[in-house]
Length: 111
Length: 242
Image (cartoon, rainbow over all chains, first blue to last red; front, top):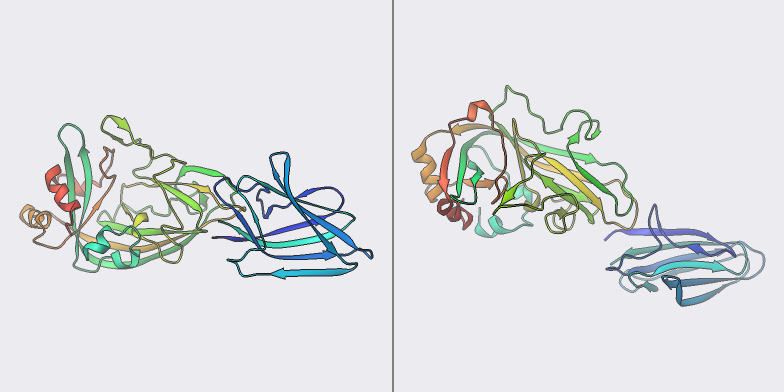
């Protein structure tokens, strides 16, 4: 099991959340992507909303919105076997924010 | 060696390394179809010396396949083969396993290199990307290479490897080559060889190519000094000889 980071700067344009380095934001069909830690930092002096999106092909299947106060950082770390977020196989993981810029760092593995 | 270790694919390579004065035999298949026959060369380890090396592969993107080639001193398929042996050492044999990092890098092995093995009138599927005929870091971990990756090399022998990155990220895979080099005496006494085949005298049997017809080359110094055995004899060995 190889752990990896997902690193992205998210603004008002949707971006892929892909394993770093060189990975794909689409999870292999026989795996699930287990995200067990994330650091979300909002550099804006106003509040910001980060929306995490899970697509099946071009269809938006699920999304969650995380409100991040102005100039603040949210850190969530859970044990590896209790992931915060599970992206199912074959799905694509993306994000968009209501304003620039949210700095996203996640730690995950495929299982 | 216990039977459990003999049959365990994940037995640590460290437990399979031979010591001085131990016997081993290389089994080369001559015919596996009409009249199954195998040529065996028997050796006694005169001196064993450690063989350990870390080999770093080029960076591979997820899903990338690197086709069969040799492990070169200056890179994959470049420079001298790291297993190349000099001709004044015709009785030197390398015996090693290959640990893989990270776990989800698959390794295919082609030995001897450059030939398509055949069995029961069809080509065997040993090719880069074949879905069954591989090992990876789960079967042969980097820190503790296992029997599933067991390989022998001899002067005139050849081995190619192919790789696929099934990790979700780009990686530069590493191989841990761990085993021993043996300076050997070639055993030419047929009576002694027969005793080894019957299990009277301990001997470790290592098949090269399995139940497939392969084209192989041995040093001139070995020629005419191997012994032929039937499928029945080899079956006995497979049941627990050694």
